[in-house]
Image (cartoon, rainbow, N blue to C red; front, side, top):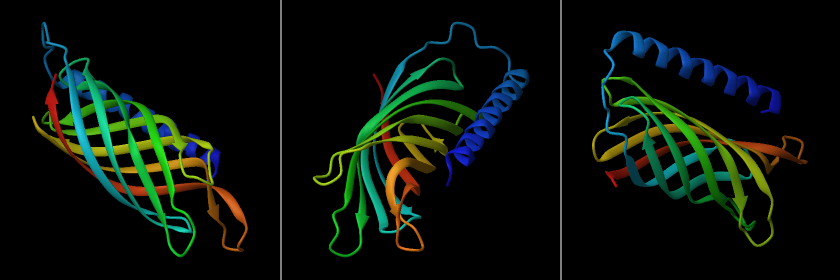
Length: 182
């Protein structure tokens, strides 16, 4: 996926978030004196990586969430993820650091979220940092958060069809987390 395609995806996501938030604001009555609070979620995730030589992604994370209102939150997520390589090559392990915006769009449980940040590689033979873009959709209750997300790493290496090395990989992942108020 090229950078221009990624930028187009971000613009579409931002427009979707903006219109969903505006629509919701028109349908509900304003909540007076909403108790803004922090939440913490601890999660595990697994996914399928679309580019060679990677096959599977597994990770753990911690997400700090600050509720701006009943339907809108800011997030900060970090943890550790590993992209597994088939064969004798080394896996690609990295620390993601992402900031995001979460908007609940239906029944205060279904949400869309966009995150952007960095993926800091920590494997022995690869020490680059990549831009990380991650739109997601999810379902959250008071304690459980389940989401489906696409993550794109613009600078991580991949194998092209002709055997040359290129940049830019993506994965589709599922996250299961336990969350609580701080």
